[in-house]
Image (tube, rainbow over all chains, first blue to last red; front, side, top):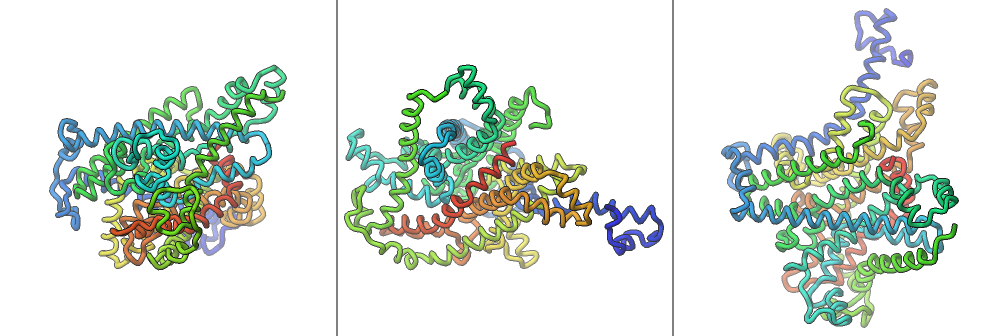
Length: 330
Length: 279
């Protein structure tokens, strides 16, 4: 390896001892040690610029009294200490109360959505495990919601949820007569269920895709052996399929949780800038606190609290799921 | 042992219901896009009273759809290419080399996945404005700024998936190339990359879809000239009218390229996930 290092590199780095065999080997080694860092540099720089530095600035902002008057030159905004945090967690006052409500709505929504996505995705993947006629077609069809751009898919749901000319009211009221009068789906309490429906429709194919990939890794002999031992379908599912999918599910559930919890696109396209109270997800809530009421300091404090919550949840989850496994597996 | 009859019944029922759930919005999108405006503003009907391709003609003049389309193509395309190239380098380093800070790097990059986008929306906006003021490079409001932002969105997932994928390419292959006189880049591009094509395609598809569908940053960081489809489609709702038939037609038009691309390449995505994310 070291002999392939071009001679001029050797001269560049070691002008004094280019002829010496020892130093001549060094540039090659330096290049090899530096190489991984060089390869990582673009990724690292971009992550720094777009994620880490903004995050640090966001944390700094959360300690400032940052209203629209200071936004042009945010560095000059007065420090406010922990005021933004105090306001955010004062659950008796309007701002804190609304944040707590939004947080609870988001938790409930996320748990339901992730649970349903996982359940539907897993069932579909298991049912499509065997070959049968139409399997390929169904598999492609099931991926369509995932492939559709969020705004195109959600806007279609908005149309379907319209009060006067929507499909949902047409079916529930006009055709099935389940409701006395057409309901409102995008305002009021129903909006939570509307959001959940759209979220599951859009999200389950991802679970389906991952579980399907995981199923391909289970050796067929396991099922054959189980069948010889007289294990039925349910037993095979419980004793082979689900345990084999454990590590896949751990990653899948965590990713689904983070994506759903942070989702902005779906509620934003569904409801616009201010979501109804029943479906006031935390991302949109913070967006509104920042960009609609122009209080960026409080918005930043809320974002930091959200990040801390996600860090704790992820940490606890990783600890729980890695128990009994080598740390390297995490 | 053959599965019991109840299995086939439950499979049939489940798959039928699920197919219906998946298809209804797709049907609504397609059928409404072929209806005259009067039919989509009145009571909903499953079947169009009269078919028309008028919405497909009108979508281009109601809003500058073609411009938004081009903007989205440029932004998503550039973000995809950059993201894939950068992820290939980073994943190669992590997969093939031992170095200090390797674990810190992977953990840092992966943890950026959990940041709520809203946390760095405003700071990033300020950074772009400041960079613009200091250097004259317009990042805010330009396609460049959006490309830069989007490529980092897909980067963590891409790196993570490619590490897994590269790990599954036998090390002997590129070590042999190194012995034969290839440099590290030769080994990467002549051996590792060709062997990992499915993973790379999967990552590219993911990056493109992420950029094509993003709404939040697109709505804050674009102006009239650089607006992408994600924001532009809102233009079909005016104070007087919501052109639902045109919205559906435009949604279909912007969806077809991604959906078709995704379905064509989905076998790679599954293969990539199998080797990468699902170890």
